[in-house]
Amino acid sequence: MRFTHVLLAAPAALAIITCAFAQATPADPPGSENLRPGPGKALVIQSCSQCHQPDIVVGQKRDAAAWRELVDQMVARGAMVDEANYEKIIAYLAEGD
Ligand code: HEC
Image 1 (tube, rainbow, N blue to C red):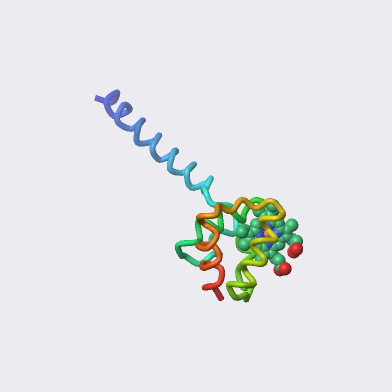
Image 2: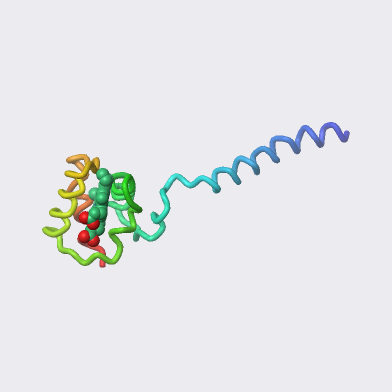
């Protein structure tokens, strides 16, 4: 009887441990939580976290043209921005505060 209980408890304990680890190592880099939700958020995290926190963009007031200029500078520094994602990133950045 007791042995059965141990057998049932082991997978449950393992699941709890796995969950705790999953929470301890979030996929998003630090600062990501400061980015407002939106279709471009994941792209900004993906392209703009390599050298600084992605929330460096928070509170920066620029229009689309100014963001293009800045993103171009980041690309020149080595940011990996897929051409397909470029305008989505600009739109996300320009929509913000
Ligand atoms: C290859 C490294 C690298 C990547 C990737 C990168 N940046 Fe930067 N970024 C820098 C460096 C270095 C600075 C600081 C130098 C400066 O302020 O000119 C900086 C500064 C900034 C600043 C502050 C500039 C200011 O004048 O206040 C913003 C905003 C910014 N980055 C946005 C972005 C965005 C958006 C992306 C993604 C498209 C990105 N960065 C990706 C290197 C990078």
